[in-house]
Amino acid sequence: MMHPRNNSFASAVASVLIWIGAVLWTLFVGLALLPFMILRLGGVVHWAGHYWGRVLLALGRVTVHVENSEQLYRAGPVIFLCNHQSLVDVLAFFHALRVDFAWMAKASLFKIPIFGWGMAAAGYIPVERGDRGKSLQSLYDAADKVKAGQSVIIFPEGTRGHPDGTMHAFKKGGFILAKRAGVVIQPLTISGANTVMPPKQRRGIQRVYPGHIHLVIHPPLLPEDYANLSVEELMTKIRTIIERPLDRLRALAEAGQ
Image (cartoon, rainbow, N blue to C red; front, top):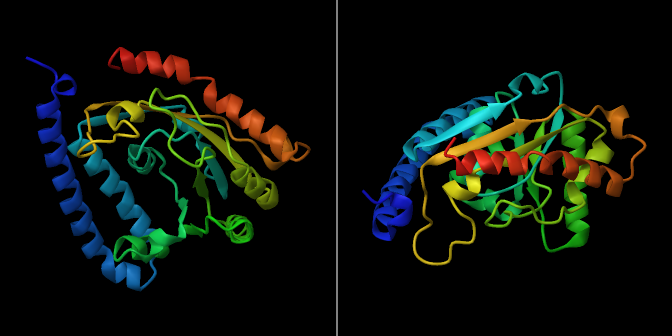
């Protein structure tokens, strides 16, 4: 029997069914959480996000493998820095990171009914793009929230990486935020999400394939570990850490593990 990944019609049908299920499940969760959004009970909204992500991963028959889960920093606010492969990264983080965290997201997303309300209720941080002054102020506002105790996940590439899983150049914003906030940094490496939902699909519905995602949790960097590094030096150091296991993880994905 032909594998769905090699059968355009089969993969299209399977993807349509997954997307229908994902939309219905997301609407159900969003409507159920409306009272908590109105009351700004962010902890409940974020807790529900973990289960929302797990159900969507199960729907897509995606398995997440976590390496070094014992390294996950839990003693205070932390900035997670990770490569970005596809939209499925979000689900993998909700599944694997059993701590409270916020996303930095485009300010326009917060205007979407239900979805945007949930983001605001969960304490996610809006980022203005296209205006350098507003973007910089967004980083300063985010740094204040992190110093006040809000952990955050940042994709230093600023967009999804190359289809083969290799990374784009890093942008400075996340590292400026880290230097200003002066809290723990924890690098993460994700691999396999680019094969589950390949980026830059140009025709028809976004295809979703069953598969394996690997998430590596690297040892945290304390503020004193990077206090004497410039933004550029810190960016180079974090990129080296994130990039190091990618070849090994890519081989695991190719082996179907």
